[in-house]
Image (cartoon, rainbow, N blue to C red; front, side, top):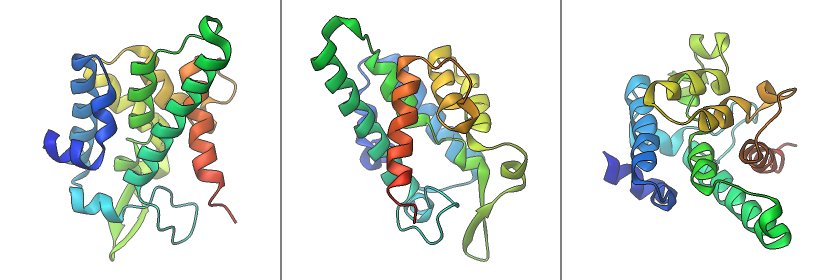
Length: 177
């Protein structure tokens, strides 16, 4: 299953720490399994239910957020050198996992993706962080998942969480009408 995951989300390969890469990939694949999703389902799964009939799927959104986040980190590094330190492995893992909770927030009814009962009770930042915490990931990555959306407003976000939050909203807001 890991080769299939790397095929659709090759950015996992960019995580330098092999142990962290394996844990992050395990979170994604186990979330798919727990939600009873297939790789084919992911091609259809919208990245949000808040924008009617979006053609952007969860995989494309995850990859775009990850690439945006890494580009932001690169610009910060070039502009500010050692004044801003970004843990790139944490940033990558957090960006790749930021929406993993959508595997629990969504269900399919009559061929359409809708909010699940679980999703009505816990939005994806909460369910994703809770699920990911079972995989012995660093707390900084759990923080990125939990704080990437409005649930993180009011928290003191790490630099990696700030970057993923803004990368996510850029990739969401461009599709709002």
